[in-house]
Amino acid sequence: QVQLAESGGGLVRPGGVVRLSCAASGTIFNINRMGWYRQAPGKQRELVAQITSSGSTNYADSVKDRFTISRDNAKNTAYLQMNSLKPEDTAIYYCNAYIRSTGWIPVDYWGQGTQITVSS
Image (cartoon, rainbow, N blue to C red; front, side, top):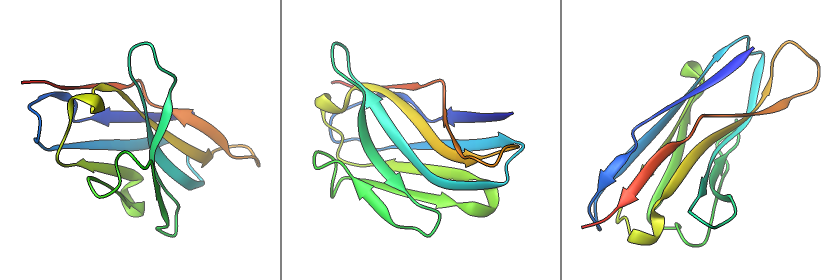
């Protein structure tokens, strides 16, 4: 089985900085894309940022130029550097990874979620 462990959430002031980490562990043959989603109260879960195994990235318009996603393939870990945080960034952030484990077909895995609260 595969587990995704997130870290780095918490309370931060507007304009502040947070770095999230997501480490995949277990039986892993290949990790395709890794990414971060978020869900604010009363809203649907939305994609924040995504990165492929080759390093191609994709961002939500609302976080472009503020957030940066990266990954360390050797450590099966993805990072989300969040700068210039705004109150509207407040949400639970979920790590997502498309992983080929013991089967032939990759499967989407999710972390447990980490709360980011941006408030003065």
